[in-house]
Image (cartoon, rainbow, N blue to C red):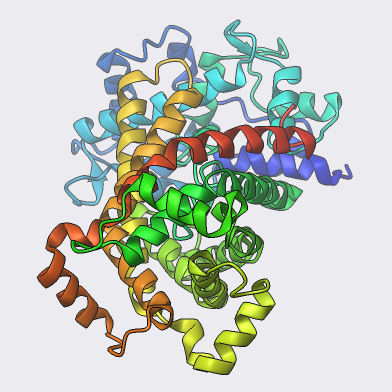
Length: 506
């Protein structure tokens, strides 16, 4: 049977949530009757909260009765149950659940692994069960795949459904779903990934966040570029909306000191007096212009770094994601850093000093040379590590806390929880990296300050600590925090409208 490309996407979707599933069985509309004889007769009355059910299954898999289920026993047991599974699935299950690293799962490890895994399967089942009737039918599979950017026919959705439908009703209940994917070693289920992505939605003007995660289906179907485009537009609107706060932040970072206190209101008054209301958006053009190239470079670099840091076929761990994200951020920042430099100079410039971005670039090049475009580069690169690391760690902690405490019927936490987690994690990241951002801005602005001593990063830090104390490193943080909530709100609203306009969400 010839398989259409859209069906291939759907098959790949099911492979991601069940790596052992045979693609051939889907293509020929046949299926392996899951858990034949050995488990199926008991699974109809299986109580997922009962350790007795898991004990019975464990006893049958533990053929040599040594109190452990090893890879060979698990592989043989899965085969005896009539399941089709991917090569390496048994090894991955054992390695994931083997807490004491003795090469096998004792009952406690076996029980814990299956209970945690079953919870993830239930979250996915509930997310796919759109009408909450306790069954998944072909229309719900079709709708779910369309939401992931895959357009399939009703017949193709029925073909997928048949691979899981044990009783021939053309509907899959929870027992059939759990039995079919019980020994699927996947952990990053698509629904959880999709609901919990945050970096494309939240743009608070910082350029050092961890890039987006996209599922394989989104990459194959082309949905990733639509989401990046929606995120870039959302970032452009949010940065424009909060540009006055961003400009006064830079103004306070550079000009405020113990002897020359610049307040939030005073900074606004000074800027309006010097250049009028329009001057509050000075430098915003280049700040918006750099979003698109930086986003594209960061995404492409992130995918390559993940491949380099992750074993083939392995799951991307949090620390690997952090390393890949930090390296991708450094790569993107290195590429667009001259634009970052010009943004600072334009933001601090007086009326008539620069006639646009190109005029600014020519004057910097003529007066200071090519090296001037990379002033402040070192603290900027160092700042990526605390920002990205803390942002990711806090977000993952908040996400896992919510999933473990509140995720009973769905993996979808709701928009307020998502925005709250993203705002808190981004704010914590900013708090950690802000002193480095201040040093970067002051180094970029040194030529405009008419000072004879062009300090290095360490010299600047020592000078600030000596003259202004520790809190001198946080000059301008008030407007920086003030812009977070409006930036997040604008980002989200525009992002949702753009997704609808680009056909990502129905």
